[in-house]
Image (cartoon, rainbow, N blue to C red):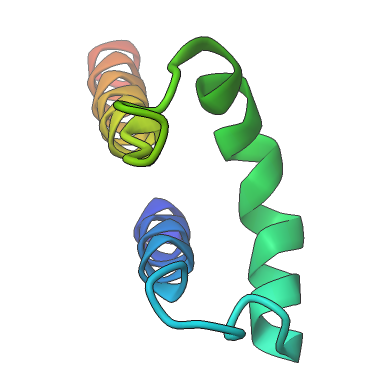
Length: 80
């Protein structure tokens, strides 16, 4: 449940980049403070395509989903 909220926070933050001046708003800055520490390592290792298209958030969302899936699988195995 908490991971779903964070997933949507990352998704909204990504979509906010398409709308000018939204990231400078209060909500944009708040989301930036919560999401950028997670996205920063991916941006460091995955360069933008043609210098414009940043696919690192897609990889970050995929890693987040796989980490949650792995954690749930481990907890199910341990708690049985």
